[in-house]
Image (cartoon, rainbow, N blue to C red; front, side):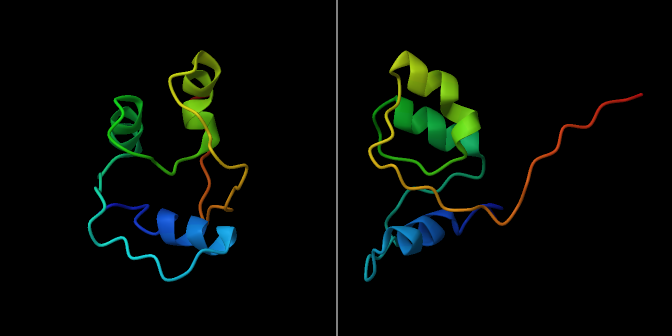
Length: 81
């Protein structure tokens, strides 16, 4: 089961959109697959902006809305001493 399965619902709630059913949406187990599908023109994706900053800068992706939903999780770099 995808760990980020509620990203769209959370984003829609922050955007104030209700009543939209996502039952026919494509679902990916990994963010990079959703990002690549969006780059290939297969649809839109919700992801963390740092994951796509270079694709946005290069014009491979666009952010059509200036809406960000806070994520319930964080990423931390871990390095050996």
